[in-house]
Image 1 (cartoon, rainbow, N blue to C red):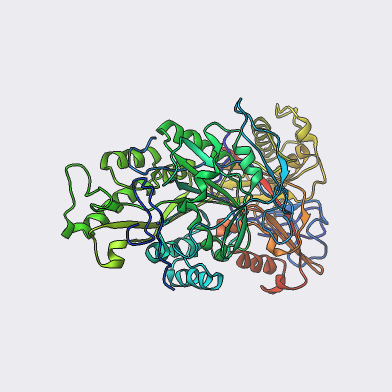
Image 2: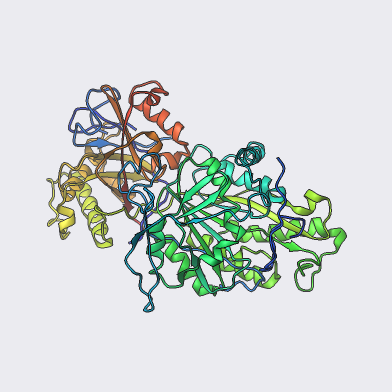
Amino acid sequence: MVQSIRHISLCLVLAVMTVLFTGGCRDKPAGESSGAGASREPAGAAGTAGAAGTAGAAGTARAAGTAGAAGTAGAAATAGAAGTAGAAGTAGAAGTAGAAGTAGAAGTAGAAGEVAQAEKTAEGGVAAPAPVAEVVRPSALAGSWYEGDSERLAAEVDSFLDRAGTTSSGYPIALIAPHAGYRFSGGIAGKAYSVLRGRTYGRVFLIGPSHRVPFHGVALTEETHFQTPLGKIPVDTRTIHSLLGEKLFFSNSAAHAEEHSLEIHLPFLQRVLPAFQLVPMMVSGLSDDEVLEVAAVLRRTVRPGDLVVASSDFTHYGPRFGYLGPPGKPIAADKAEEGLKELLLQAWRRIEAREALAFLRYIQESEDTVCGALPIALLLAALPPEAVAHQLGTDTSGAITGDFTDSVSYLAAEFTGLWPYDSVDGAGALSEDEKTGLLKLARYTVESVVHGGRRPTAEDAGVTVTARMREDSGVFVTLKKDGELRGCIGNIAPVKPLVDGVIDNAINAARNDRRFQPVQPEELSSIEVEVSVLTPPARAAGYEDIVLGRHGVILEKGESAAVFLPQVAPEQGWTVEQMLGHLSMKAGLPADAWRDGAVFELFEAIVFHEGE
């Protein structure tokens, strides 16, 4: 069974001291990135500057064993089409607050200066990770492609962000952004990264093409940190180690040493995200089938709360780049501005449709010099089905300089949606068979009680109870009718065996969610069942540890408490502050009550539903 990540109802959970409680559940001009795989030295000029219970009831979010949840509101045949992809591992211990001050860093190597590294063995395996000293990849671009002074660099990046004028159309899970010197592509990069302001991500999977070092596959790094004038960014060495066990993935720090396609993004990430771990990847020479293989690795290992960035400039036009337009359709110099807009439009149509192989076929047929064609294709192939593409802006170096003799095009885009809630780190994982069994049990239970029957057993439903299903677990059962919430009840704390929690919460969602009338027999064919299995809540050092999309949050202040499941904030497109404001109000407190004296507990969820 494939885990669903479709938008699900907002579950607003209010804690009360009752058994059940509910509430709402881009050298050219200098610094312009070389196209067609050029191996030029960068000379980038620095850029210009349910049941009973209401909010406020006594008790903590876990005082009662249960809670309610309510709804609301190919090989790219183009020159330089090197790409990258892949992602694996996990970051952020399930349900934990994370390493102090670092969102989602808990449980990952590199959190305290010592990191885990591994070498690919001759047999293709991976050696066990061993603690090593910090190894830093220094900046190769500071003072040329962007400002070398930290204060001037921060101001430079902030100016691009402030002028961007872009806001997200939902919850961003991926971006396409350019990798030229900031003089040329900083404005478009700002349009991409400004949508991340106010959000948090545990890991950033940064995928770029190799302009200097040829290879075949996905090149990872041996470094533990990447550095810019704004500071050091920790590499998620645990994820790197896991990726080294995958086909086509290998370690090649030399490929990363002078490459600009990844580093150029880092100052933007540092200015918009409070803390994150980096998974830097470069690719080259992948066939269509290999693109799909690598994308499958990325898709099954990226988790909610992660961001994927595909680094690419678009058409490199003019005699300098050896490209004057598609075969048989040359673009005259006096028509370059219009012709380049059309090429961008054709590429965007394939991207918007999220058709990875169609995009690569277009690149091959048009011979368009999109240097990051592979990173883009990998991203498109890895995206969840419900992801939506939004173009945020385009530009060309020709328009910036006023000379289209040689010009590079840039595009910014975001993809909104949710990565799958199909796994958590460590304890609490469920097999696909167990997920299927729990859904079957929940469905059987709902139908039984709606028809007036007694509380069923797993044996009645024909479900084999595994050891994992006998473990105490927090769990919610959500019922939807025609996509709208019809009932949602659950227990946050692991107070009963998972199998019993599913049965009891299925009964309560169908019969005892006081926000709704009991489910009637004639409604059953329209009801969809969803199960959310939670990790045990763990105390956070502060709200800074919250990774949107990954963590469910319990807010407690005085005698008031409220809970949001992990999917709530991304479904609503909220920032951290917006989410906490709503959570405070759901606890019967002022919207800013979370800022002082509040305690936060975090947990994760595996969410699966019928129809997948």
